[in-house]
Image 1 (spheres, one colour):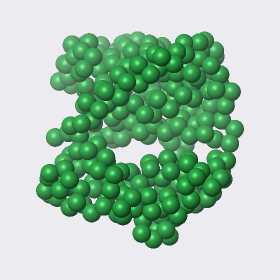
Image 2 (image 1 turned 90 degrees about the vertical axis):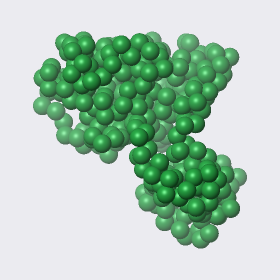
Image 3 (image 1 turned 120 degrees about the horizontal axis):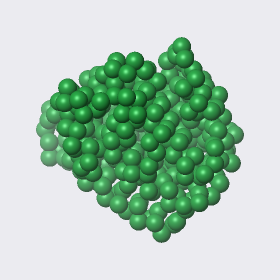
Image 4 (image 1 turned 45 degrees about the horizontal axis):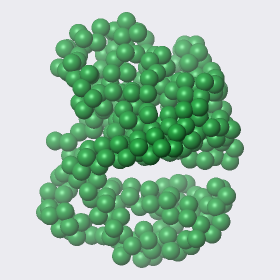
Length: 337
């Protein structure tokens, strides 16, 4: 059965953060049946639920629910696998975050990142998915703390986001959060996220190098292709992208294209945490954002490219995805067309 996984690079950073908090991770890995030695194998990956159990036990053993924030103290580019170096060689943090979103599955498959311009800045939002276990809050907090610390390290500047968004109620002790983020905290937020000032993300990075950025893009792209090629979700998504402009693709057509029976396709997608209908919906949503960014495409053309025979169905789906009409989405982002 295919499960979501986390790279050994990211798992090693988590272990270092937990060990800073006084957790004996060698003993803990043995208790959880996980391979501590594999942390030093750059190609090893750890199951998402194993990482969730690791967080849960670490919180119980340390008595520190904010232990995830220790990630801000273990910053090094390799924790993000090749993606860390791709970020460093980017022109600015805006380009770096675009790369982070593109390659984020290399670091961990349990996270969904989004990077979107806001009226007066940029938002990097995060959703963590569990497999059989609901994700640990500490996992998301660690990701935000590490990401911000990495930005400060790369720029050499004490970047202060406009807002830190955290799901769930405010903890009894806010001090660790205030010390790490040094920015306004918003709890009970819809998503985990960092809201940045525009100027901070558009300033040139000291380590920018276009030639290296292209090289890292190639490495990351090759790794992702190799990593994803075994995933039916990835293969089916590619087929859907190809077929959508001809109308809504039927499941049997996608199954035939992949040389699978409908039942096998459905089972494999289920094992990878999705379904045919969910994958179709997710693919359309992702493509809708891309197409609406192309101002030469009319809304009618976008609807047909997404396989909607009736544009009103596209408008309904879009409102469900983004809480606004395609026209409102475009005008809010300053896109006309």
